[in-house]
Amino acid sequence: MTIPFNRLSMLGDEAKFIDEALAKSHLMGDGGFTKKCHALLEASLPGGKALLTTSCTHALEMAGLLLDLKPGDEVIVPSFTFVSTANAFALRGARIVFADVRPDTLNLDEAKLEALITPRTRLIVPVHYAGVGCEMDALLAIAARHGLPVVEDNAHGLFGTYRGRPLGTLGAFSTLSFHETKNISCGEGGALLVNDARFAERAEIIREKGTNRSRFFRGQVDKYTWVDIGSSYVMSDLLAAFLYGQLQARERIQACRRALWETYHRELSAWAAAQGVTVPHVPAHCEQSFHMYYLLMPSLEARTRFIQHLRAQDINAVFHYLPLHLSQMGQHHGGRAGDCPVTEDVSDRLVRLPFFTTMTEAEQARVLAAVRDFRC
Image (tube, rainbow, N blue to C red):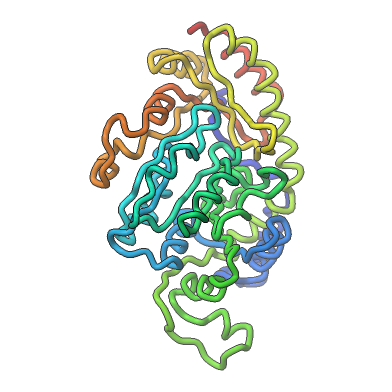
C-alpha cells in the first residue's frame, strides 16, 4: 500500500459537529461554530482578535487592505515561501522585495533585512518555516526603527512559540492556514489574527464585503450598509464545525505529530550525518509546531534519486518551494538569479518526508527503513 505524503486525519468530534451544523440549518458564515473557533483561537493566542477566513491567502489579502497598500509600495517577503505570501500584496499593486533565508532554520534572514528597506517599504512579512519561529526580536526591532508593521505568515506555526510567546501574537497581524496539509485542518480555510486593536473593527468590515453587518448582528446599528472596501472572506459555518472538532483535539494532534517528528529525528540523525544530509534545526528558544520533517540532500541529483528511490517503494516524498524571485512573476518584480543564494541552494536540495497525524508506527517504520537504505 502506498504511503502518501499527507492524509486527512480526524481525531476529534468533526463528524458530530458537522451533523449539528446541518441540523441547525446554518451553513453560512459566522454561526455558532465560527464563534466557538474564534473564542478558542483568542484564548490560545491571547491579545488579538481572531477572524476565520476562506483561506490563509485571503487573510493575507485582508492585511494588505487594512494597511491601505498602494501601487508602488514595497513589501519584503522571503523568497522561500508559498506564492500567496507575495501574491496577496502584489494584488494591491505593491512591489515585492525578496529576502533570502537563514541556512539553519530557512527563515527570513534578519541580518540581511535592513539592507532591503527603502523609503517605499511599507511592510515586512516573515514566514515561520516548518513551524519554527523566525528571530522575531531582531525583526521587530528593525521594523520599529523604520516605523514598519510586521505581518506574520504563520501558516505552518500554529501552537509554536518563540521565547515563550505564541507564534502569531508578535506582529500587528498574523495569518493562519487550515488547509488539508496543515496540523489543524478543515480542508480549505484560514484566519486573520488582529493583534493591533486599532484595526479590529475595520477588519470585520473588510471581511464582510465592506459592510458593517457584524455590528448589525450585535445590535449596535439598526441596519447595515456598504461602508468600506472589502470582499467575501467569511468561512462557511459547516467548515467551521469541522475545524472546531480539530481545534478541540489539538493536544492529541500535537502529541501525535511531536512523536512522529522526534522519531524521524532520532532514527535518521546518524544516517544523515554519514550521508552528508542536513536535518532540521530548531533553536533552543523556539518550540516548534511539528508541522513537517524535511531533509536537505547534498545535491539536486541526490534529491532526485532519493525521491525516485522512495517512490519505487510506494512512498511519496516531495520537494517544497521554488524560489519566488526566479519565477516569472518574481522577475517581473525585479528578482534575479543570485539575489537569494541560500534560497536558490536549499530549494534544489530539500525533500519532505511523509508526515500526517494518523501515520502509524508501521508506516513510519517503512519510511525509515527506505530512507536508511539510500546512499548519496
